[in-house]
Length: 299
Image (cartoon, rainbow, N blue to C red; front, side, top):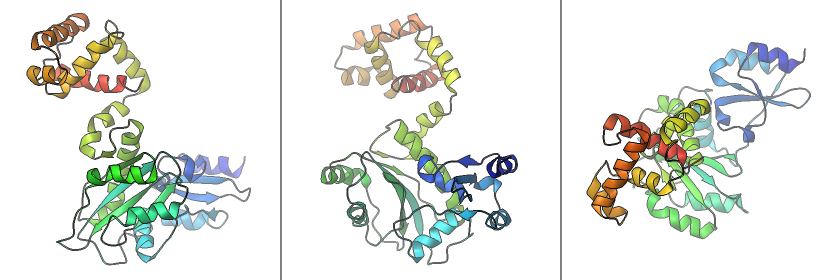
């Protein structure tokens, strides 16, 4: 039995991979075996004692960071579970700003400088892969301006000729909760990025996609068959119902957005109800139908 097999029997979460190849690399402790294989073990199965023991015969493997000044190192120790508090001045508030770029920047330092120039002071910034990472936006004074990423996203994409997506977590004043908030925000970012929610997404924008992403593929197939079997080829009808539900079943607003007569809209809604047997005018049926329509966009 190899050392990796032996470790997997103790740590079922162990993966044979590199940090750049997994969605949430900071959820793992990384090591290199004597054969130079890179492995990760989920932190939930880990303790400081485990780390000390494994370090006797494995080499700790650090995720590459462009810079690790004192503030960045303190934050990373907290997020990795190596410390329970920050060793530097605490912010009044903080939030995580995840970013992903469609193309690897030719000059990462220039890209990083552009991000840092958005803030009144240097913020902790970490690259997780060659095309993604996160910034910790720290609010140090009561009068510090809050960055509006919706206002600057177009300028950034124009300057770098590439698609950029941000996921913005909620603000928090509780630093000890940072690892949990970070883990949840990282997951939300991956969902928002996968479903192309918007260029600048928050948990409110991502909420419906979190539900559809959690649905097992086998369940989705049955849901698709149950709801859309009779209307799957009628793209105009499906789009009409999606807009109808997005407006809160407001017929007047939907008709206005689709540039159609209210009677024509009513005909389409009735047609969908008749063919599927699902009354989308009722809230209990409108919600799952809307989530299914969102999923349909990515099939």
